[in-house]
Amino acid sequence: MSTAAINQKIWSMATHLMNEGVSNSDYLEQLTYLLFLKMADEFNRPPYNRDIGIPSDCNWDSLKNKSGAELFEHYKYILDTLAKQSGTLQQIYTGAQNKINTPAVLFKIIQMIDAENWSAMSSDVKGDIYEGLLAKIAEDTKTGAGQYFTPRALINTMVKCVRPKVGKTIADPCCGSGGFLLSAKDFITSNYSLNRNDKEFLKYHTFRGWEIVQSTYRLCLMNLFLHNISDFEGVPPITRNDSLLSDPGERFDYVLTNPPFGKKSALTFTNEEGEQEQEDLVYNRQDFCATTSNKQLNFVQHIRTILKADGTAAVVVPDNVLFEGGAGETVRKKLLETTDLHTILRLPTGIFYAQGVKANVIFFENKNASPIHQTKEVWFYDYRTNIKHTLKKTPLKESDLEDFVKCYNPENRFMREETWSIENPTGRWRKYTYDEIIARDKTSLDITWLKSGEDTVDYSLSELMVMIEEKSNNIQQAVNSLKSIIDKIDE
Image (tube, rainbow, N blue to C red; front, side, top):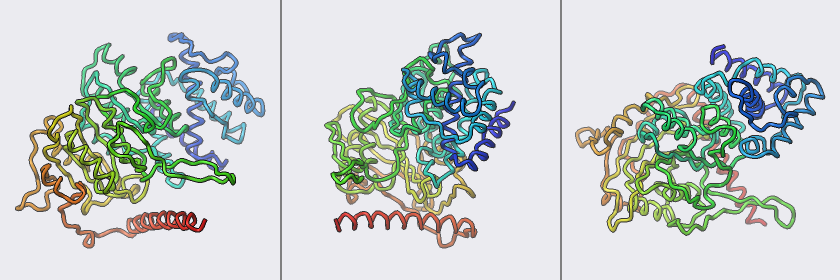
């Protein structure tokens, strides 16, 4: 059966499950449990003959031959038992619950999975199926499922600019479903001839990630596994915790990431009255140049920490990282002094599943300690002014960013030419020297030079409705934040 046919078959079940009250994300989680169990069974048979460590009373045969209430009871037993195992098994099944309400539906999903030989599929095919499901789930913006999903067009563009090499290490401190790691793997396998040692290093030693959300962490482990990164027996390359808590002691050649949106980190706790409260979470780390509750600024500091002396980073950051005073100014100055912060890509709204986000991609290379500043000039590409995208009508495509990649000149970024000039004031590619930037108020990197012509843009009615919805959501978020502040004052 073709990839498209399997994808359609699996997704059609999700449509049926919605009528049963099972969300798309819950469905994918159940698929993760069952797929892992099915493939473990396949690897336990010839020609692989690999003992994955699944107890005999929890194997695939013990599940697929049951139905009705007996199936439900046994499925719960399997989930509970595997959560008590070690290694990847434990990581996949910790906290696992059956969220499918009808035994007949669970039985049908098991039959659907049992009909395919998953281990015989290439990692590309299996990965494409799983990625397709992740992409569909990310579209479910009402549930916030898109929080771990960065547009693939943006991810691939960032990877093309960084051009990761064979035998180097790649990390994502907030890896979500693993999009950046998988794109980097695809770039390496597509652009280099790999020998046996290269392939082994790529599978077991290249990638490292952290993810704090249990369900997303589980999806990431399965996604990497389906793409032939790590295996059943090894230590998972992804750690489930808050990567900002401490310096992991590891250093990497590349960091590619999109830290979670939202300005502040918060800690939820139960007060003396038994009510849930939140307080700003501040990370007091000796290796940080600024102490702040702004988690984007903390991620930027953390990323610089985990880079090797000559390591390269490409990071998605919101606008406040470029202009905020106080800790923001301190972090920017430190970056300009200790790294070569050479490129900033300004992004338009309408490309992320979190609506109304104004973001940028910053590219920098870490450097050894020096008495002089390491950044000499910063190149800006304005792909925001007079650019419009919506998730449904005009989603971001890789082709939209081809001109940026051409200007970035990944093969030799030291040979660049501005497209902006006095004679051509509409050029989107322009550089500013270190002295020009440091002289700006608060060392702001929030720079634009193009004139906005939004009033002359001809929007369709549907696009206007999307824009109105985005603005309404932003206003509602602001109202909720204000109400929360007022409530605390009243207390």
